Image 1 (tube, rainbow, N blue to C red):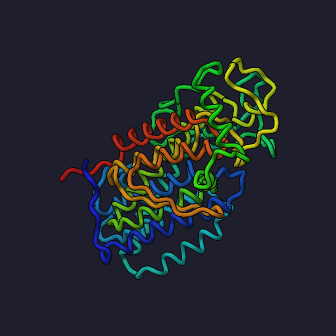
Image 2 (image 1 turned 90 degrees about the vertical axis):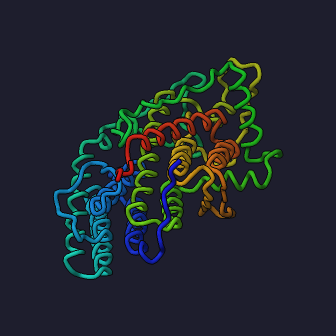
Image 3 (image 1 turned 30 degrees about the vertical axis):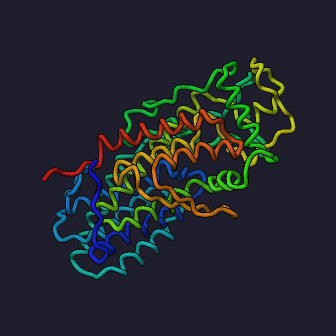
Length: 406
């Protein structure tokens, strides 16, 4: 496996800093956006990082371009200015409610760079690439109307879940055009176990035992693991991916490429995951365990008073979205940096500590466990989600972000 080379700190810090800074600005912009704009880690982050990658890569051309090379002459252009202008252009186009904040961040970022032809040419390259990315993603399906969700009434069908009984979220994602996959259903998950099967009974009873709020079998460490993964996914992934790649001390183009490949893989895995979720519309453990409906399985016993440790997210259960995302991230890290890469992720959830991994397989094993311990998923859903994420990331790696041969 060819691994990416680490760069020298002094030579590469400036260009990489702009990418790190605008990864953070993207987080703030999405979180501050109006809900109607559907700012999404599945769409906006990949767009921003594709733009920064293509802009920076246009200057030294180390990798195959993602959507095409700009016509602006990149000779002598500042990679840092190109990254700033590319990210700014995409965010300003996608999230108009945050334009004032973006304008201020843009001005501040550029003011920190030396004035001159290099900065000006970098801005021109980045603006052209950002505009091209916006045009490429126009009418990508994110704003298409979504019919009101009508839950099924039979055993196994997804039902709105307490305490809020909120309408399911991300119903628009199955209709979004993927970034790299041929279609959202390309790696559709196999489907949940049949209700009468031994596997479903095993999954049901494991979550019932270990995922209950008052479980006597779940350890303190397992409880911490469950809570670790309940942070808002946007802040969790933006911070941890940004910090992880920044710590590699890569050359600017390698830095941009690593983040873009991670975000495209994660974005398409999310699109594919929700396509599967809204294909199968499978019920959550809280519904299955509390229900009076007969699942036809003699080895599952309901409990109307059962409550999960963590709040159940408002969307169908199968496959597990955290499994899809973590599978995509683990596969991408493995392909770029190696299977035994040291990874440290953090969570902002109170009472949690940093989690350290020395193999990418450990990342996915833990997230599968965590969603069972939290009481919002079955084990099979996590396993199948990881598979979908890994398949997606493998496709991305095999078709994009390829090193240009000397």
